[in-house]
Image 1 (cartoon, one colour):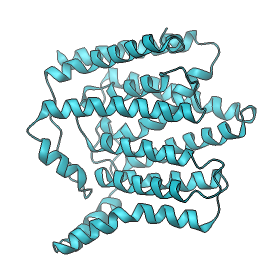
Image 2: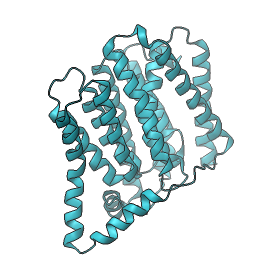
Image 3: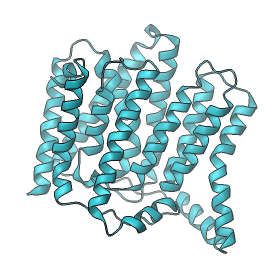
Length: 328
C-alpha cells in the first residue's frame, strides 16, 4: 500500500506524508521533551542548547521542521541524480519514518543538526560525477562537513565519503584532495583562534584528543518494539545493499557509481555510532541519511512488493504502538 502509494500523484503523497508525520509528532507537541546537554568538545550545539534550554516547545517545533526540510532536501538530491524516479516522495517518507520512529528522537539533538549540513555535503559529493575541475564542489563539501562536526564531532568522519567519492569518480588530481582538506579545516582554524584568544586552546585540544581516544561501549537499551523496528529496518537495508550489488552491472555507469557511494556513506556512518555520546537511539541519526536513501532506492526498484509491503505495514503499526507505549 505505502510503496505503491508513492507512485501516485504528488498531492496524495504529500497528504499521506504530512499526516503520518503529524500523527507521530503530535504527542510530542503536547508533552515536549527537552533537549539534553551534551558533554562534547563540539561547541555549536552547546550554544543552541543554551539559548533554547528553557523553551522545550520551540525545540520540538525546530526539530520537526528540520526533519521535514532534511527529508525533502534528500529526496530532491536523489531525484536530481537519477537515483529515484522524479514523481515520488518515497525517500522523504522513509527518512521521516526513520527519524520519527522513536519518541527519544522527538527533540533537538546534535546529530539532527549535523544531518542538515551532511545532506548538503552529500549533494556536492554526487555532483563530482563528470566534473573535470571540481574545486568548488570539494571545498563546499569539506567545509560543510567541518561545520557539521562543530555541532556533532563524529560527523567529521564523513570526510572519508568525500575522498571515497573522489576515488570512485576517478578524480586523482592532488588539488581536489588538498582543497577538500582545506575546506574541512577552515572552521577549525577560526575555532582555534577563538580558543587561543580566550586562553582555552590547550583545554580544547585535550578535550578533542580525549574524545577520539575513548571509544564508547556499543550498547542500546531496547524494548521489544524498538528491537523489532530496528530489525526490520536492518532487513530492508540488507535487501537494498544486496540488490544494488547483485544488479550493479546492469545499471548505467552514473547510477552504478552513485549507488556505491551510498553504500560507503552507510558504512562510514557506522563509525559515528562508536563515538556516540551515549547509548541512545538518537545517535543512530547519522546512519539514517544513507539508510533512507538505500531503502527508498530499493522500494522503487523491486518488482514484487507484496511481502515487502506487509513487513513495512507491520513496522508502521509497531512504531505507532511504541508511540502509544510512551504516552501510556
